[in-house]
Length: 365
Image 1 (cartoon, helix red, strand yellow):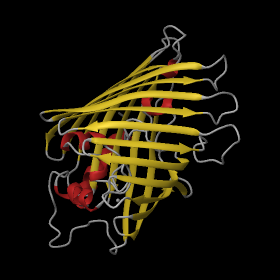
Image 2 (cartoon, helix red, strand yellow):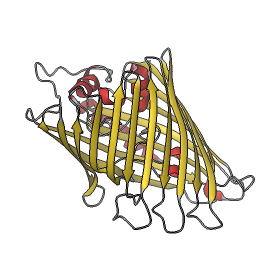
Image 3 (spheres, one colour):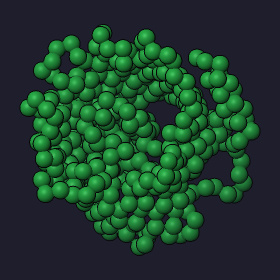
């Protein structure tokens, strides 16, 4: 890596020693704990603001060392009715592409603020997810949710992330890109959720315009069903978007997780048929396998393998991508991440043969 990147790494490590921000979705933590997303997040399908249990877990179980704060423990609650959270990701990266000059840069990936108002405690919630950097303010989510008395079902309406597969932290993962359903493409609509025992299900109807105004061409339907056990989980998802004038897009996915000792495994496979693209449509296949090895408390080693076939009618156009990432959570509210990613695609295209090295500072509260 470049000299600037090494200097930045030293600066971040120094800051970590001197400075002892909610975590975006990390489904491997749910797999390692044998829990549903709703155990730690106010959103039943995961991501964004954590609830009080999630905040306490993040402070007592995730960090390698817990800095004593006495009797004061952050649980996200400003008052009984208002909860606040935040997330900041800033990194330094070095990207190498064949026959191209290496690109070194510092980048603010995101700064987000989460706000939840329990208008009727345990029954009616109003939620906002606002990205404040980089650039100007950008609303990601804004919805209201009504729970049944026994919390076995809920009804949500507004702008929201759609239910489909693993809610990964990495929004550039192939499985999140080819489906078009990720945490950068919320949509406006309604969602019904059902949580009963081991079962977890969501059904959503939305505009299909990634947060834009609705059209007269149709709507988008999303459905997801998962079985969650203490050691493993398995789910299936489907999405049909008929909002595009050029043609509909459909996606089907299988996803799951498995805990084997200190390793939490994640897997997903998605088949997409996008008829809005030229040439009569394109069928795509994307897969992901990820292993998270808890080396010690506060230390996680993540290895990810991805595969993408962007057009199943074209031979020899597949891409593979491998990532190795080390995550250190030295104290509560601070995480340091360092990784390398290698992309291998069509031999003739230099842009599909890249190496990316990065170091990231992640602050959360």
